[in-house]
Length: 107
Image 1 (tube, helix red, strand yellow):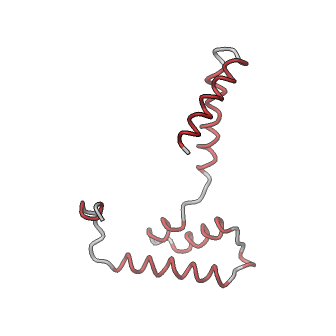
Image 2 (cartoon, helix red, strand yellow):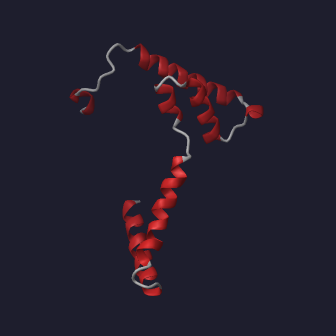
Image 3 (tube, one colour):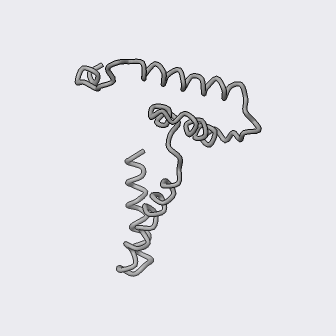
């Protein structure tokens, strides 16, 4: 996917470089990363991160956002998924040693 994105960016630069004046090209090409950055500022954190940081209510709201579930349409599957997240959080928080060591990276 990275190679495809790189090739698309190079192709885009060649096409825009042929059409626009030299000093306008960087301004036009910078709009895509700026729009991407601004768009992701407003995205909520992932539910897993929020559950790990003990923000259970925000984690549930984030999961609702990503699953496109409003408060009126709560399904049993969604409740099961929330319980799985909470169970995983309880498992992780009950461990006494949460430090990462080099042996964890080689597993």
